[in-house]
Length: 585
Image (cartoon, rainbow, N blue to C red; front, side, top):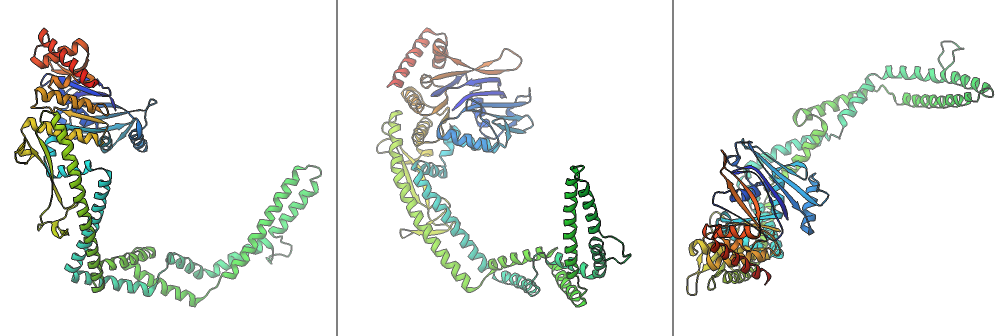
């Protein structure tokens, strides 16, 4: 969970720290005090888009820091991701995150004490935090988002089916596009293939071998300088092992080393350390003998063969002809040939290949159609469960006669999308299946089922969206849920029911709620108030925790705008008492 949030230099907030608890945390305050900046700060901390216009001129940068307490399987996964990225958790298992935004729009992120890309914060945010606000309500009114919402609700097995469909769809579209391109550009492909074949034929005739140009270069040098190499090796060998006829009494290296060894051995009885030196001289004599033998063998390999030299000249000329056309060296020429072979297979427009690709297209199309049908059936089954669960929640939100229906409709064929046949009907297929999903509201018995954006008032829409989020939370998701004024347009009994449901969510999640409603705030486990200070030259806001009598005064302010009214405080205390009973129930 998120234990602490510190915001500096963001909007009206100069420097404040929110100490959060598990359960339900409520944030209240006067309009314009800066409650929205708290949600904005959370968004920044978890990779949201940075708006330089919200950075205070003094100090010219906004900093948001948060401390995460990681636990359970999700905590282990998050901690592993942070460690892999180079960050470290503190000794108590918590991790510090931070995001800095300057007035010029530059942004930096730190995780576990290490600088990291902002995308890392976004990745962590997807696992840890879900923000639900009025903008999210508008997002959920889009059909594509409603389909995604239903897919998430349907569960992990459904998501595996959806992934299988997406993979099959991608392969099918790839084959379809490849086949169409080969047929459409057959002439250009044939011309390009002919040029590649000419190059491959030339390279095949020469048959270059890896590193051959370097080997031939070394061999040419040896053949061209064979006589000089022979003289050098012969003289060196004679000097080491004898045979130089300069003078009969000229000693060779072997003889000199033998004399030195024997001389030292003769005095070793007087000074034993000379024995070690004599042994080392014997090792040197052995090494000289080995070199002498290798020089003799080397002389045997020297051959001034004019015919071989001419053949090498011709071979090198043939190789240079290849390197002028295809690459800088022979290894590059060989790589060019391998690439050309691969490219030729891609350019193939033979009837045999086209027929094979067409058969593959038909096979994949049948697989896509089969998976699309299963996906539709799975969505319709999940739609029934989803409708029932949301409708139950609506009954508890003072909409006892309302129902939410989830319509799963197959998409009609169009010129812009591929089509498949599912259960005998031709339907348009996309990357997410062949379905359109639409949430519809029946406000009361006998009322027509209308899309949410047309059939719900502002207050009804808020309650429907909250019911949906409650159902989603029951199906899993991130451990921390943020609700930003989702109770807008609601009051009375419905407001109390919203508070009850948020409190119920808080039994299994950390819940942060920004609200104007005292009926909702009364259910908080921790109540934080954002207060504006206009005493100085610049308006600033801070956040403080309120408890007991202070909390009753804040609820009284929210009820009637009169924090010191005895009647208002009595009403607030009654709200707190009711909320406490409901939470214990």
